[in-house]
Image: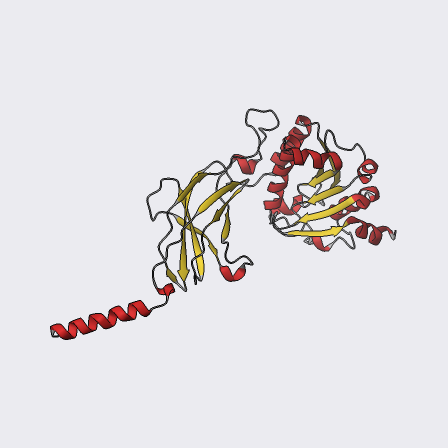
Length: 321
């Protein structure tokens, strides 16, 4: 090819590159920031115009570039605030020091990663040097390697009851196979002493681990009970002064032990709140005074999936009141 032809081809190619839309040029995410919250870290960054989605990479702090793992994808078309990208990352051990990078993609074409941002995740709630506050579930002690066993749950529940004046533990029933169904009754400076006293104030019930093979809510509820028992947060204390918090960490202990959705008879317990044929659901419905007080928040898959109904409606169905 002659020099003139090579020059002409180069000019044409350059013109084609200049005419390509911005999305075809490498665009790096900028403005990446991280905020540490309890149990998760929130990443935010400046949007890249035209990006199809963003990949979030996590690695131990100081890890060599390219050794991280993509832990999530953020898609603008699934968000309301498309101009304010934010991603909640979880699944790490509390107290880990980590680094994150984010990159945009156009279709399947990845763009360069952002500069990394580093942060230490929040530690587990509770001062390790404080009696009661230093309680940990089996799930916490093993860094999520194993879920909390029956024995550990009962020991933790008993220890929390003994360590905090804000907590009273009540056995509200037994499962089909005879496992105790415990309820934390929490208030400040102390919980109300009877169901009738509870019914005279606003109350919230967290009914956890309805499906035995979905144990995350059980772990979360056990940790939440500890936080409510020992928190010095002014807003939390004010709430506990004016309302009662009732936490059933494992309504379906038989299902948890078998890692099955239903209880030991195979019954899906969140389908039994009308007929109330199972002892687990009956345990919740047995006290009419309590039912009239409760805003029942059923935690099924996890703390993010919440079904809500008013306890008075359930009471009306059961008692015809």
